[in-house]
Image (cartoon, rainbow, N blue to C red; front, side, top):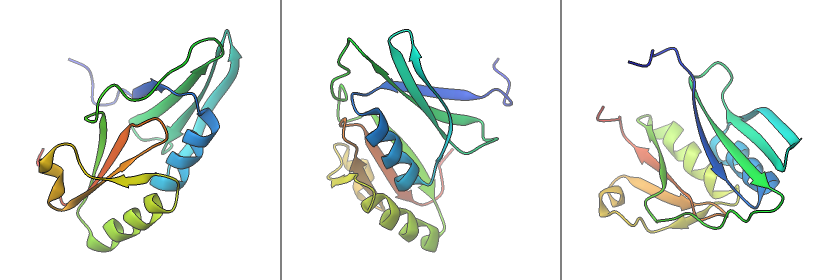
Length: 132
């Protein structure tokens, strides 16, 4: 079993490294917590909250194109149960370059809003507590 104290990094490629980094920092209130340039043919940025057990890594490659999200179900879901915090999150993500879209999965149409980044990856902001 993997310990609860282990850090989880979710990585994905992008052709828009700086723009995507800015979107996630401004739209989700993350911080740039690390990064690298010219590591072989790769450059990357890590965003998240310092000392949390998860963060996102965006990478770009000088010779390969990342393309768009492989499906409309590539989601990051954030559960926000406080109504004021939820409304602030919606305003923040709406003003950061994410595009509001209809959810592909109708489950998210009740009490949640779905947004898409430049690469077609989606973020769901759910107004409620996680069921897990």
